[in-house]
Amino acid sequence: MNLTPAQQQMILSYIEFLLFQVNQKSQDSNLDKQEMFLQTCGGWQDDPRTAENLVEEVYSARTMSSQGYTL
Image (tube, rainbow, N blue to C red; front, side, top):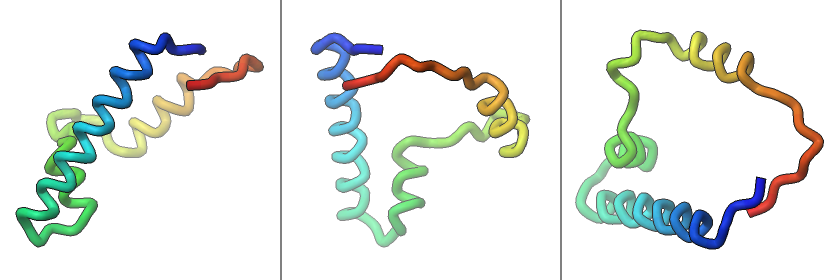
């Protein structure tokens, strides 16, 4: 799957935004990095599935592909 330059830029902008948010929170608090990430990116607290169910679902949805992917 090849991404267009616009799609690549959108992904990079989002990553930069997330990194900025984590860095900002790290300067403002004494939280560890994992806690800062969770506060910035949130979690699926309303999802009734367990972690094991989510992992099983991800693995069952995977497919094999011989096509190479680049960004």
